[in-house]
Length: 411
Image 1 (cartoon, rainbow, N blue to C red):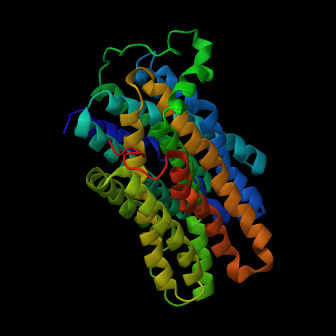
Image 2 (cartoon, rainbow, N blue to C red):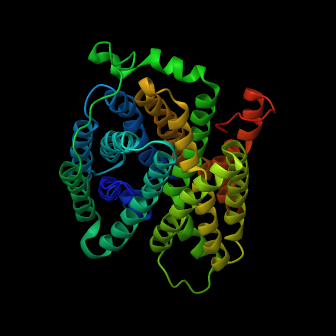
Image 3 (tube, helix red, strand yellow):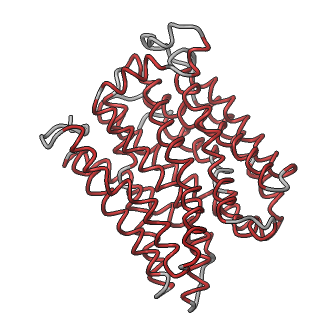
């Protein structure tokens, strides 16, 4: 494996240390701040508001300047957000501001990090590097959940947020030591324009969306992220609910189970990408999206029956949701023209983290509140709301491309 890949993967994990801190302490803050489920969901969604406000600029800038420079700024933003939450958050509004800053910081580390990997590999190696990178996102989330979930009992939630701010700073230091700049490829149309055009590279985006493979990957990623980030934001709270309803012995804390589920799901992304290379990306994406959305609803229903069954299905659901993640990203990287690859990654991430990420946690919380009159069904309805777009994607794909072969990235 390329000698730069491992340091970039480790830095990726460090950069995400603050990512799931709010999710880990959400049940505690809901009580302390007297938040409704909808308010709690919007605090989680604020991360993606900051992400979407930054990601197109951060990604498109990598067509123009060294991606490492963008990464360093993003790491500083991510660290600052954790410190802000630790010392200044006293309710919904201040928490939203801190989470939005965290989203901006993670946008400016995640996509430039992906670009650094893409520029250092080709062919199957490039696809595998990307599959590892997207999978390590889950490992980073798991480490964040585990750290926050165990630190909060010892040092309180404010010091937990403060400590998580060290992660992005360590990531920046590792990238600085392990990587060197490489010459930029042929400039994209947006990169040849003025710097302000990076904020909204519409001309490059239009070219990306004109390619139906790129369009479908981007749409699929939006649906994937809606389910993924909605699930991650509320999984600890769901496990708290399952423990209170089903009863019986609970050996592990909900936050530990959620972290373990995130780690277990990481290999499924890598394995899924390998299987997709053999059976075809279109077929794999269709199968995974429909199966995972179904499992999510069954998991929610199982909480009424058995705590142990719910825990098992948490792991199955997490693996299912992640099984097409690397396939979607590797397919977009392969399909996008080199001269606008940065802009394509920006639009792709805009759709996933922006449209899907903003909508997912807020939609889940709002569904819980709306379905509050039917408490036994509210969690199942919330997971149904997350999974329905993924369940419908194969039909949408067929309408966009027709039923013939070699469509959704079957190169």
